[in-house]
Image (cartoon, rainbow, N blue to C red):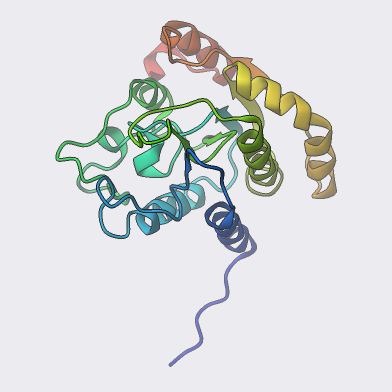
Length: 234
């Protein structure tokens, strides 16, 4: 049999990133969407499907101009797609390259994902990620959302630094929400140095309101201005 074609440097970085995400040891109440399968809520090999969804997503956006950074996956959204600010209803419809991973008869639909995808869906200059890439939930209630604790934020920040310095290297960072803004502020000096080491420049993160909890209109207005989206583009 012929030898497999060697991976390109960007592809190798993606594989290293996914490996990091799936192998981290997480505290109770944090579900690793890239390595764990819930016996009731996940289809067979759900975690592998989410890894493949993420792999295809990042490969499709090799040099984004902007990186939107949210907080963490919600159970109606990225928990079942593996991709921040997306949900099954908008991402995993028939004919796409992305697979559903939930056992629920109807695709999961998340309001924040709907808002973001309506605004930037199909735009190749924008990539999304989270401060915490794993699903934080109430103990004993996997279909819930919870705020990440300090330890989880610390673990997520390490992966965020890798993502912004190795994958979205030249992207202008946009914090979505106050927690993302505060975490990114603590990483700013390290991120600037990491990007400089690979020949990229760094500008301190910008900030928009998160679309959750009544913030949709303000989020749309803020992001539209930052991205230079004309009304006809929406």
